[in-house]
Image (cartoon, rainbow, N blue to C red):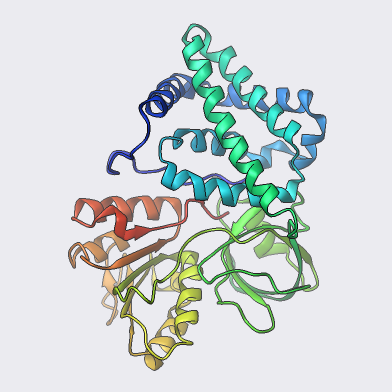
Length: 392
């Protein structure tokens, strides 16, 4: 219950089909949320205080210092309620979320307490704007979300809620970037391009999302790329304090990035920074087949030093004719073979990429900026896929 999703791009996304009653319900939620936003710190504090009073055992879901949690649970919950009118997107998302939350041993009374705390905190600060219609909208949306998550949790009750894995290697490429190899106690079933929520011993109960940079291997080992980000409690602990032999907990696989080989569409991959990891895993998987659709891989950063995986990608391209790698830096300084500008600029210079399947991975800002610019350039929204959670 600790990760914050990337904001959607509602001004560019086409409207989703939903029953009129659902559209009206979400309209109430979005309108009143705009009124509540100026009081977000106070509402968030009230939410957690009420939750821990109603269900004291939920306190164990969170780190000792709520400062490290930074209100992610509350904001993620509100984000989910904002997309209740997008059933095609919501259903699979809640299915994964409910499966993932099994690691907290969440019970029906916990879900009930969360809903009660949410509505009570909003009611206090919205005052006269909290009408019976508004309360009904928030309550109905939350009930739908909670029920879907609990159904998913029940479906996976016979599977482990998480796996244990041991750090076998920890290698710092520089001050802020580390590569790690982990060995799970048993192989974790996942697909190339997916990600996991992980908990490290240096930051107990602070779960964060990481993507393996490799396709599933016979030995089950996982390779992670982690950059220490400003304010990143977990990422900085991983980069600076991880030791060989540390034991991690790894939640169920999440996410839907994949390459549909049977469709035969050419593929455009766009990666910024450590966002290269899930796309590198997909290339790793494709390399196991004799034939593949053509893949154009844009890999970008501010400087050449940010493209730490470039040599490995170029090595893969040298032995796989279906793969073309295009490095992008904002300041190339005359470096041959590098395109200049942001990833969004470099990609859209070549037009809308009609008929391509497009995968985007990176920071929230990079994803939002790239997707927005591609839509303006004429790329169809249905061509583009990205996972909705930021890395920390």
